[in-house]
Length: 346
Image (cartoon, rainbow, N blue to C red; front, top):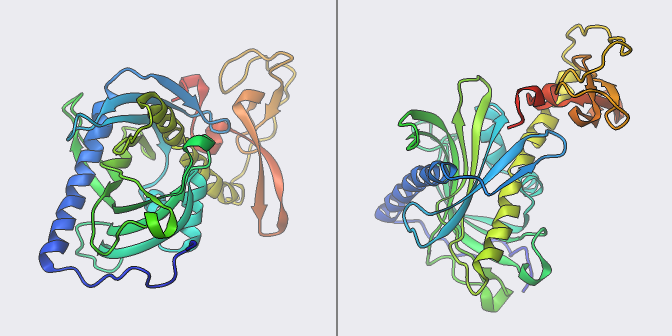
């Protein structure tokens, strides 16, 4: 049989009161333990640094183990992101096929099909809900950036939880507030294995996901992405961790996506812009303080008019209401996403 599954493929009778309460309890623990996974691993030395080509934002990758089951090895990426809580909730609250496709494109994961088995809590429907969203989901995926030998169609039955969180950072002892989007595999009678019927290998994901913790700078979050290798199978550990690096490295795409969404509004804001500067007497990049040379040419940022080098600026094709083909503008990384190499790329 092929994907997507036909409507009502899964038989999902209403959950008993006890089962519903149990799944909500697991959802709450999953949020807390995903955040603790992220913070615990972030305290270890980084093993690799990756950088987004447009935002120049860097993520440090840290190895570690799961806080609940130390036999499970894991990887966490740490970075910063310019975002609002509303933007993050809107991105992860997958209420339509279009939003699911956008999520799939940003995280670099092809979602072949997705079904909500049980909606456990939804703050948009019930204002008294303790969660922004909690649900039992089924999803079939492929990861196109994995090697051909390791790429297979997989499916998962899991809890998907989106909620605010308050957590104590074990490294500092400080209490921090933020947002978590966590995933944790569960076994449900209504969602049996589809190995025989659809050739889908059932994956297991535990206490994994994105954690965003507020910083002292308004509008910026410390961003963590934790991936616990819960079903290594016969694949060697070093290969699983290599693939985990590729998966977690996609976290930097989120800030790029959100900044792109904001760019048309920034161009249409109508704020008076300073005149372009004369470039003759400017010998150093006004973003990173690097001296201009043949390999680092001078460019004007369309928004702030600063003169910056080619490393600190990017060309964007921005769709506007009266320009259906869009306009091409050069925007420095600071105006685009709040990142400046002068203060150290994070």
